[in-house]
Length: 171
Image (cartoon, rainbow, N blue to C red):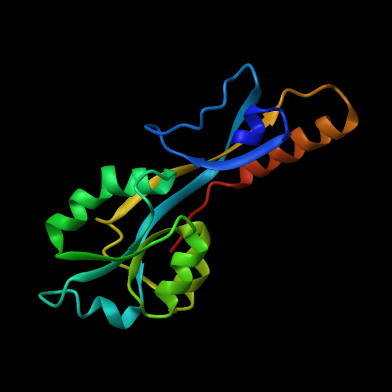
């Protein structure tokens, strides 16, 4: 985001929510909704059975000041802590690091389905009560206003076509 604001990047693809849009002014870039994603609480399939009345849920999570942390701590954690006793065991700003820790059996984490969809399909991971513990996200592309050259035109044609195909459905 910082590079886009400083005019050092031509394209930014990021997650957004209605409450947390990216701070890119429309005067600096064009915004295109490229798809949809969902944050779900995920863990190893065997760990889900131990949730009911068991020890505290070991949570691997994001720093509260990060984008995903803001979503999780402000909007999703109240629901989770009302349902389970939760113990934060690790904090990382990187979804891929949290995913690796979940796959190693260190705990459970809120992760984007775009990252763990294949893990869920192959039963490496399971979403924990996905109908209850989920948070929708938009996948958004920001691009500098086109200058009219062939590269800009091709990029916007590709982005527009990709946006039409990007309505993602996950397991």
